Amino acid sequence: MPYNIAMVSDYFFPQPGGVESHIYQLATKLIDRGHKVVVITHAYKGRTGVHYLTNGLKVYHVPFLVIYRETSFPTVFSFFPMFRNIVLRERIEIVHGHGSLSSLCHEAILHARTMGLKTVFTDHSLFGFADAGSILTNKLLKFTLSDVDHIICVSHTCKENTVLRASLDPLIVSVIPNAVVAENFQPLTYVPKANDISSYSVKPQPIPRRLGPDDQITIVVISRLFYNKGIDLLIAAMPRILAADPNVRFLIAGSGPKAIDLEQMIERRMLQDRVELLGPVRHEEVRDVMVRGHIYLHPSLTEAFGTVIVEAASCGLYVVCTRVGGIPEVLPRHMTTFAKPEEDDLVRATGSAIAKLRSGSVKTERFHDQVRMMYSWTDVALRTERVYDGITGAISEEEFFYGIHPDGNWSAARVRAGVQSYALIDRLKRYYGCGVWAGLASQAIHQRQEQTRRTQLVSTEVC
Image (tube, rainbow, N blue to C red; front, side):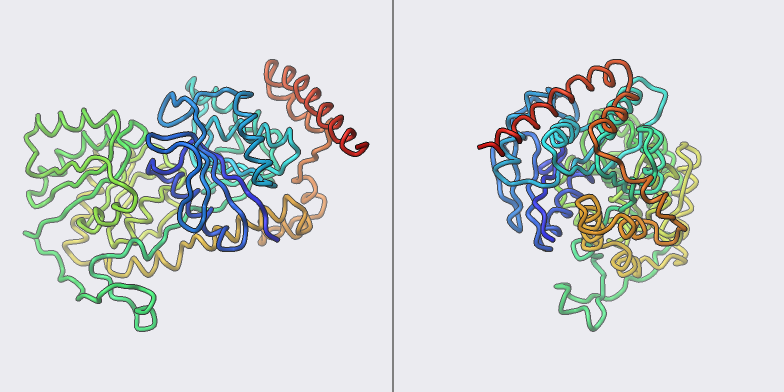
């Protein structure tokens, strides 16, 4: 059954990133399956109004003030007239929001439920419980997800984190990982199988020889240069990694506030001839940067999934990453070396990876085919479509939840317990637990909105 879907988030192209790529790839695959998909995001420099992307994907860039890291200023009700106009014009049935920190996402879900539309939320991040920013974010998330049809998380760690942060019933949360377009991330030396040559426009090349002790090894880092991406950890570990092996160099791409600290460290240590800074790169250029290296280093301090490490493995790079968040779920052990998010352990893990490559114990030429079999956006679209079928009633509740938990002993009673009731009284009860301001005040607002909607429906029927 085809649906009219609105993907809503502050994070979308032309800004590069995992959430942006996820929305774009999922939207195009859903369009391929016969659904109508539009994207609603805020205006970017040079992008205002309506734009059409590949495959007929329609993007609305609404003019809102951006305050921090491409997040728009929260206005709550100022967004409603534009949102309602888009929803009615495009005949939207399902509103799918992305990102815990996206103001447009939270407001779209709130207004969609007021208009009686089905809603889905996808969480792409991990947050703590102690600092002020996380506490406020978790309160907002609990309020928004009190009245949503289904939640999707990109990893099991992300699911556990979201369930705890928003006080959710785990039965209404599904895990659907990110994916990668493997044919866009091929190694330079990729040799397709005989039956795959027609589908891959790659000229077969010989497998490279084993790296010797004097051969140069390039370590690639592609990341936003922010604290949570572990850039301080990278700055501390990089001089020690370079000092341990004179035939190692770094290739770093990305931009952010930590770029100044990185440049200062390079100048202070006089590493200009061994560290190349590329600055920001577009997503379509990521593969060209990755294939220049042998190891991908990912020193992140928190990560729900980490799509970039899947792209790196697909390009034939051996991955060194921190054991945080959902990263251990992403790739099999033979493709990665894990480190604690500490300077000493990151240096040790990187040295170990260099030794493995020089000894030839890691067969990176096989990584691309293995990643290609593990991750597919078509599979992600199919699983997301099943969520849409479940919340719209296209499939029964039992079939929906047995599909989500195929290996569990789920009784009919437990299935019904995981389906939220959307009677007005039950919705108000869920909001009541969101605190004095959000809970009690929002009840009065929603009662008035519900009464207005019912009055409009009665007036329409009378006419």
